[in-house]
Length: 188
Image (tube, rainbow, N blue to C red; front, side, top):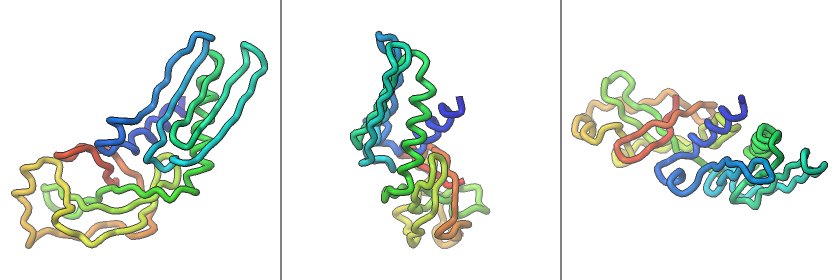
């Protein structure tokens, strides 16, 4: 079930407070019997890419994979759940490097303080779980994030250590955390 863990991580990395409210992943059974999977791709690194693959060797050995650029869909006989999940991973790995989609993640700026303050950084997804830093904007106090809204009052902007430990081109992993306003990716 490694494929479930990989897709779970990909899903988590799409969540930004908005996307997961409107889009997601649906896995359910169908009455053939079999499986049906729909993975929303709108506003993700995989948006716009297509695929169409069908295998039909009779009622006990079939599956189809289709993507219209916004939704990856797969269906198959009762033994094809892993096959469909593997096909999504293969589809994703074949297309991620072709995408121009950028993600915003946050890097901690004042590491030596108990107060956790974060600044935005732009990333490009390089596989289903990892990113490359594309841009590090100048730090602007209006773009800073904190976990608890009350922490803004505790920030001493004159003493804020604005150095970050990352450079453009660094390969990084991210984790989803909940800031005061919504969930966002944070660079580990």
